[in-house]
Image (cartoon, rainbow, N blue to C red; front, side, top):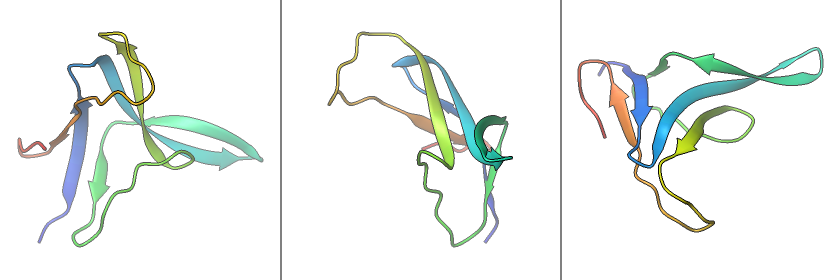
Length: 81
């Protein structure tokens, strides 16, 4: 098995989605953009506040709490899910 490399995320519900990682520097949390993320074989990626997470920006439609959105994850080699 090979590592999977997450290279991007898209959604018809947002004009822009970026991957970020929260790091602690001198006691301060900072979000840093990540261009891609390698997922080792046999592991799972958990997106969560304070760790790796998605920044969903510029909604293309009005959204309210509880709405569902469609998100597609794109991987190196052309696969997506």
